[in-house]
Length: 178
Image (cartoon, rainbow, N blue to C red; front, side):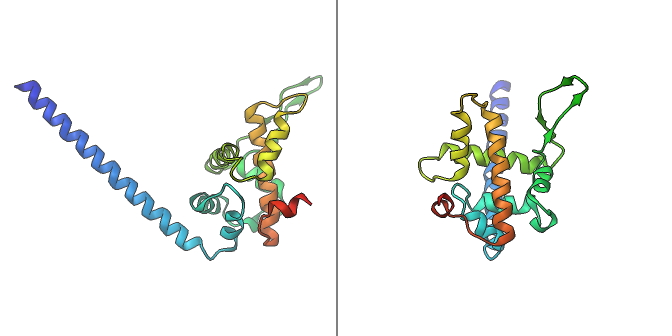
């Protein structure tokens, strides 16, 4: 009898948790739609949406995490803000492997990492230069490891995005090839 009562209480708790999760998912979807509505008229949103592999939610999140692009004077400052600039340690005859410094915005870095990974997975549907660059890095005679290639693609993405946003140009794969 007591075990059945405990089981009923646990089932009720599970139902409550499931309902709460469903409510939170609905609230998240409503917030994403609100972000998209607020961003639709912005120049940055249109430029980011022109890049293959970037959807509505990702474009809004990138705008939110990067902030005003005019704060950066060049793409290197944007890389430093994201925390993917190279940290070198060298002392006389000793030189350690290069690493990213990770001092920047960790949310932006995580968003960029998963965004580039998604672009690579969808490479057949929507070609872009970042996927081509990843393929190039992985087919060189000295093949780059996966994460090194991803960070290199993020670096290239930030450079291209900085130029597109500062000049107000939409991304076009065919135009950039010529």
